[in-house]
Image (cartoon, rainbow, N blue to C red; front, side, top):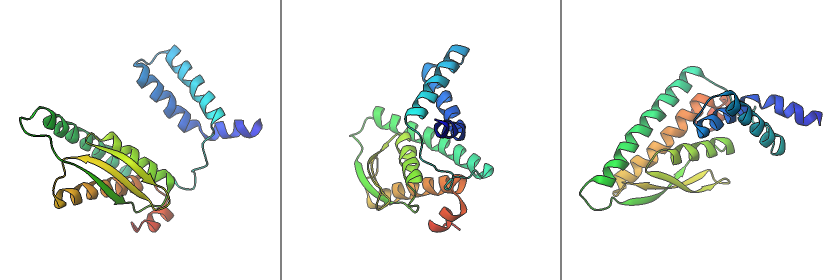
Amino acid sequence: MSRRLDELRRSWLWILAAVLLWCLLWGAVDLRTLLGGALAAIFVFWLFPMPPMGHELTVRPLSAVHFLVRFLVDLCVSAVQVGWYAIRPAPTPPGSVIAVQLASRSDFFLTMTGILCTLVPGSVVVEAQRATGMLFLHTIGPGTAEEVEAARADVLAQEERLLRAFARRELLEEAGLR
């Protein structure tokens, strides 16, 4: 019992993030929504404790801001591109499944890179191989070898920004970024 309470205390940042997500999903920030989100988050974290990740994460504020701004720009640009593909008077754009070998072998950063790539319109992760650190993405648009390589480079750049913003020095060295 006390071990679970200690785990909850160490997960306060994740619980706060879950409460914020809860408020976003409900579209309101009031006392009832905050309390309901807190109860739901505590219940979920109590039943399904997070594995320890303290050895992988650190926050570099300037890199984190750069990461966030660039991610938001990528989101907007790709949303406009996908919207244009939907309304343009032309045939359906080509789609490709591309394999991207990530630099990091961390499960956390593999998962986060996959989530970020899926959040950007026009791409979705179809498979992630934990053992090899490989992501397979379906992308809209790349039809030539150069465009496929550009899409692969975008994923690797996204991973690099994520690592530089939140990975510990040892993971950066392992990924060849130091």
